[in-house]
Image 1: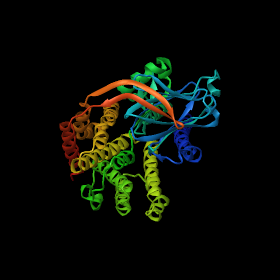
Image 2 (image 1 turned 90 degrees about the horizontal axis):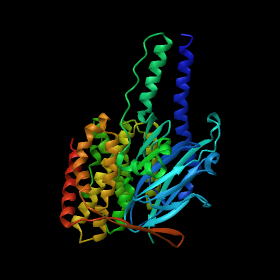
Image 3 (image 1 turned 30 degrees about the horizontal axis):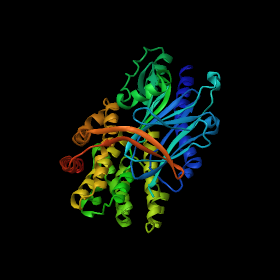
Length: 147
Length: 327
């Protein structure tokens, strides 16, 4: 009994942390990210997760011809400076990278409907495991009619 | 989406939270239950519980390319992979843009929203009512949009989904029904809340079926409008392009192949998914150019189709829609 209570406490705390992290990511996205889609209709998808240094996330999505799109990768300040993303076509041809760019926003359209592959990377900065930086990352997509 | 330590597969933006350990994926809930059971048994000096069996791997179709692209090592530490299935709003908006029109007679009966009783029926109904809400909003039929919003709310409530239809959003919809742009914003928020609640609660398989049913309704509406109107190559293209969505759905169904709910429901969608996947795709090199502050991506892939293909898709979409809405 002496050992079961701390164990249960740890599990409950872990479960609570996981839910809390999800809730915080959602809240972070609402407060800090959604406004960047102004002028576009949010496509209604929620793609949010906590990323640590050395981790990556990917998104596969269909984009339609006839629409203008805004892709915005919104990240917590703890990792936003190092994080970057790449957009590739179905043959892995690099179409866009945010590496070295001033903004994490990518405005584009496609001449024919196609799937694009987005990879988000948070480079490993060599920090010890217990000190690894982390933060919420949300991928937002908005669309509007092509002019 | 997929992770390192834990991976996360999002559907249409609905995420399916998983854990990757030694190359195996385990759902978070199963793992935590296993940890809990093991911890209790060891603390009590009892026998160790069997750990939960590893679940399905991520889709070969989409992840193989990503694995190559980012390298095997990083892939194994990839946090998340989202397979973003579009919400109905985007498809309905394309149908409008390509000359579609409103046909109330095609929509589901919102009065039947309380008749759907099983988990499967509720997920189908929520998807279909959600698309009818989007379609009505896009075509500026806001009274109908409110009716379908209420129908979707009733079904969602029975499924324990409350966030998307919270009092504030419903009140805003009521107040802004004269403003199409505000209604579009509200509908997109409803989908955002729906996706995020299901992700947070680890109910991604429900989300997958809701969005799959919504997609079927969207293809049904689009193809029926196309059938009735004068020849419209732009709208034909929108319908044929659903092949891309079919391939995403196919990948997601494979990801969830071991899930009992998906196993039970997938067959309803198979005829439409497979018919669309049978359309050939032509490839050409991708090009990019800057134009007025945006990047224009040219080339890539084009779905080829004939009028017979479209007639077939229309028929199968109607059969599928009637099948999933049958009580």
